[in-house]
Length: 400
Image (cartoon, rainbow, N blue to C red; front, side):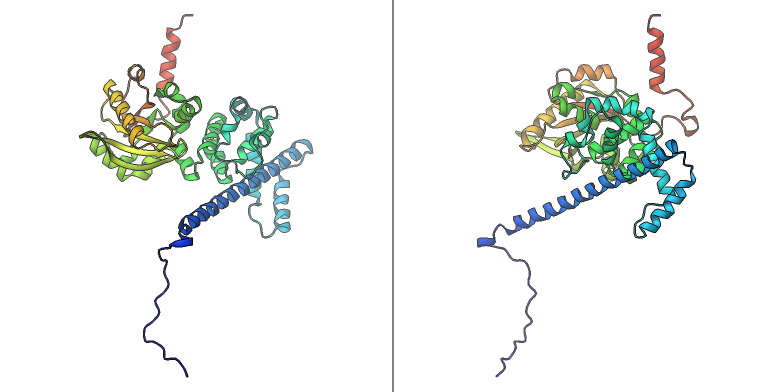
């Protein structure tokens, strides 16, 4: 006898609140998902590392055969055709790509680039690879051979950067010192290709070498952290994307920055995560508000921004110091580094900033912003820079 079926449809199963022996299942699942994502990222970085090393070796082989065996340029076309026949399912071995591999090796093994790279490799080799070398590779000392073999050391450095980044650097950056700057920053901060392109377009290298940064990081932070904080800070921020000729109110500047947050973070640099605007801090019966609050993934620290539409004033440093005390007391996590403050103002006097920060124990940086180009496009590159003018004045003051 068949059992009569109920007219009710069985409801689809859905996750229920787990009790008893499986109560920790959600945490277990979350841990596995995090481990899988980490493994995928590590594997991708390891594949990229080997791919870039392969391209380096191909480029080196072509250069050496042309220099020592007298092979002509036609060998590149023949090599591309033979590799396509041998590996029909693999892409990336066209004649154009082989020429890029040849340029890749030739540029980074040149005397001009090595003259820039070797001093850096001698003083701080591990920092080049702080973020970019996969954990699955051998330990750092074995991977990074050091300046006693500079070409091998550079080979390991460039292998930490994705190939697409190298293609853009070879096309857009011609000065060896500038190329080394972007390589080091990409390796240390894990810049994506879009972030790298934005930094090149914004002239990050030119600003880094031409303009003095003003902060008290070296006194307020441990040496290793002070250096990272210095690299995070810019002396000047380009806010042309706001479309403003001038800012009349600090709140208006703040609103526009939040409305264009993606562009602002690209200008700040990789690693900044937005926490909030007008971030509330309470002390007793009074409330205080931080204009913009970020968290920096690599510094592992809160970064507070105070926006000023006018020039820097010494009292701004005292206000920021107070905010940082509150952040460290109320918001800083147990494993976070000390909170940092950045005062973003329309202009600053470096001597005034230096004296204002002398008595401050919290790490504070002061930077300028500009809302539009200071020179019309037709005059760019035709007039001396501020650094060039300062150098002329300095030389004129020096005794003969």
